Length: 370
Image (spheres, rainbow, N blue to C red):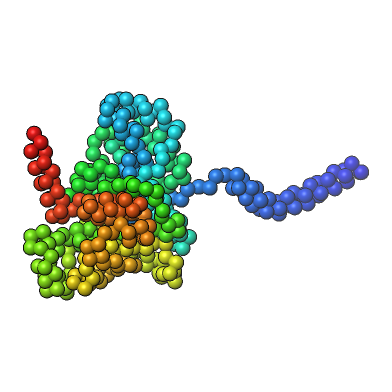
């Protein structure tokens, strides 16, 4: 009797214990999940679909400093270049001219994801390079070392990558190769050649700052053509006569528009004063004589810049030194040079009449030197 009773008792106890165990399972499962999640590295966010994102294509030489590697390529050829890259693939590249801009884009993305977790209206960075695929390991190592979020690569093994820009839904292409940038501009893609500043760069860590020239950058080169052909007096008369006629768009108008759309996402949350994107118009135009047409053109597009600086022909470098932009776009190389000297990251936009005259002068110089 006792063994049987004991058996029954044990069975009941077992059932009771089993019931208690089942009741506690969900709680213990959550505890275990929390523990293991704490051991798992934080996952990187999922990249947005290209058709929804603002895609910035950046060349490897714009993103990283590769002067030594480029010298080997130029002097010793592609085989020596690839071998050097393979031998040094565990050595990360140092940051290049476009690096602070890319970091600032990613900082904006972080804030956008917090405000709009399900939105894909984000910046998407694509590494666009004519490097051989074997060099990709060093590029990946460098991107991971600097904690960059770049998942899309295009490595074309010596061919120009510009033919892929439209396939990647590129909104802006940045490169150190002026020829490739010109190819992109001719294809109707916003593009600029990056230049490293002549001294240490100081940029904001909590706000993306982008500065634009006006004519032949945001606007067409219509006004510059008047200046080149007829001089400043005729230009002022022309601008006054056509003050209420919007200028045609320039190559970077679309990028300003994209920035404006993201700014409005912060404004709609009551964060206008805390917006992590700030834009600047920095133009050689005179405010009184020709500034109204520029501002009215932006207004007609439904666009604005946070600040508008009319310099009436004065150097841009001292003003840019106060702004500390992550990037400054201009079509005139002497303004780019002035920006570089002031410690500003500058990007040359090869568009308009000034570029044609520059190419003609270079061709003439080459012809005379033969």
